Image (cartoon, rainbow, N blue to C red):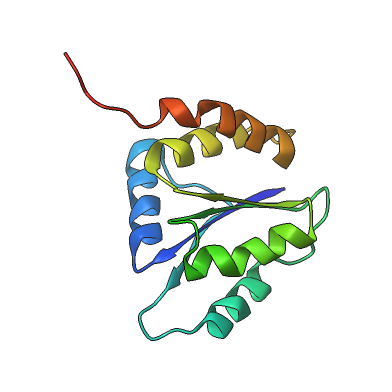
Length: 131
């Protein structure tokens, strides 16, 4: 099973989930973790320790963060350094999240395949509107 977690400063992660549900419906295995104003790094890590469990080839985690170098990124990156079944992508946005969700609906998709596919497509996910 592939779990997708979103983490951000403030309510950005929850807002993305609301937008996803408007566009493609409710998603299983998608969850938000907010880094609140009054939280510390240890408290955020505690939340992730309770969510990232039983990691294995059959129980993988893809974690999207708002920005590289922020507290949520720093906390979750430690999990990906310890285990190939956890991956972290920073700079989350709605197009990349929807792509990840659509590609992961095939129950056979592996985390490494999905992250490679997403990396190939990232350049097409943001651009300048021109005539």
